[in-house]
Amino acid sequence: MEHPILEVKELHFSYPDGHEGVKNISFTIEQGESVGVIGSNGAGKSTLLMLLLGIHFPDGGNVFVGDVEVTKKTLPLIRQRLGMVFQDPDDQLFMMTVYDDVAFGPRNYQLDEKEVDSRVIRALDLVGIPHLKDRAPFKLSGGEKRAAAIASVLSMNPDVLIMDEPTAALDPKSRRRLIGLLNSFNHTKIITSHDLDMVWETCSRVIVIKEGEVAADGPTMDILANEELLDSCGLELPLSLQNCPVCSSRKVHEKIKLRGVNG
Image (cartoon, one colour):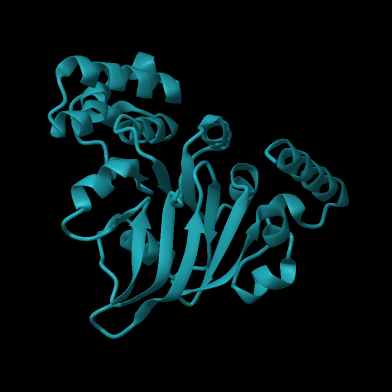
């Protein structure tokens, strides 16, 4: 029997002060899906990510990556299969060169240097920055740092790419480049963001979290065009769908066309 790439079953988690961060959340994600996870500040998005990655462990329920449950014993395998790109790339880039940052993960798993080099070059090519391999990360622009952080995760060949606020602090041109980059990947993707226009353009499905629970789960077009639903969850329509019949019509048409192409 083929398992979903990720399965969350009746997940519960409370912090030591008693605050319930996650309440009875369940969903599955299939291979190749691109899923946006949205919600207002404090809704439980970050807590959910920490549970998926095994940084926190649930008080009840289970998380499965394929047929492997996320437990303390399985963490080494889980960390290879789930690749997390943090909101601040400076949290991931700490070596003297971009090459060494991207090589850090494969080297940590004691792969031979030929395999390490192959993975690094491929990851840098995928994000379009092979020319930066010998640069110091602290000398990069915000967009270049983001690309380098993504490459450092891709070098581990993860099954699922998880991104927390990937467009945060990017200038418009870097943001547009990142959106194009994300759309070029065939990886299963989970993206949390307040940038709903980016979610509209990169995700085929959206899960809305409200007060630690799933408030809605469905096709991006249905969720992000539902003003009443978004408002009830402390969110607003994507800017491109607000107060402009021409832009809204074009965006919806593009989404329908894209959905048809992707089946």
